[in-house]
Image (cartoon, rainbow, N blue to C red; front, side, top):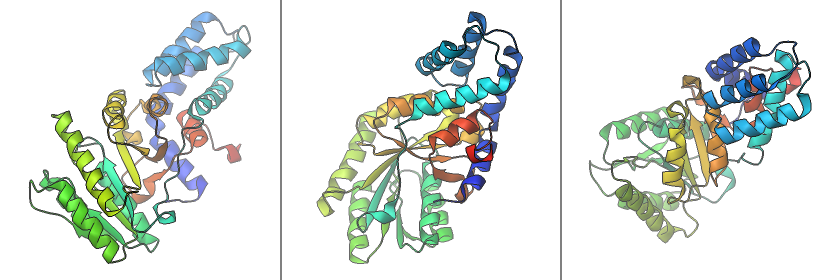
Length: 314
């Protein structure tokens, strides 16, 4: 799931425009060619908190910025460059690689997250990308409680040219996952993508169901699922942190996907989510198209967040 870096950077910058616009406008109104004083430092910290970077990250970033520039005259461009570098440093070590075609066959990917997070669409985009690269893909509609989710996945499967497995309303999701995995092994599929329910009304029942799916998959292959992706919606802001805690502590998450970054002025929430999780961020989404889901690049994200050009364009 890659495209030329310049094309993706432009798409990412456009997707993060609401966040970067809010930040750059505040920076422009706060920083002039006057010496950097405590009032401006406090204002900068507040800007970062409002962008949902989180109080701890905001404090570290402003402290690092002030350490080298306090008492000196700074302009808008200098502030944005410094913030970009500091945010990239905050995200260092939180990038992950998602490449299901480099692992065992069939490679099983479990998608988890609350309903409405973009989980089903993310799965569909990945399926389309993989079949476009010649992979034999099976999509499993493991959310057996929502007919709408199954119908949406069926449309994605048809669009992608992927095989589709589902069952009636209320069927046992673990049984479906087990049977689909057995079939995928027997018929030479490359990748199996399994959707799951995301009902948080009863957290314990949801986690029990997810763990049951994991257990039955391991009966077929002790290493399965080979990837468990937690899909988070950036538009919910810091609620994404709570979702990460709920799923991350129970469901053995191996990677995060942050979606809908184009729909919020608080795209900075990716920073505290990354830092709170034991799993790296592997993919981010900034639109509805297949090409709008791409590998996470911390430096590109930080520069786009500040409305700056790509590094190779400077």
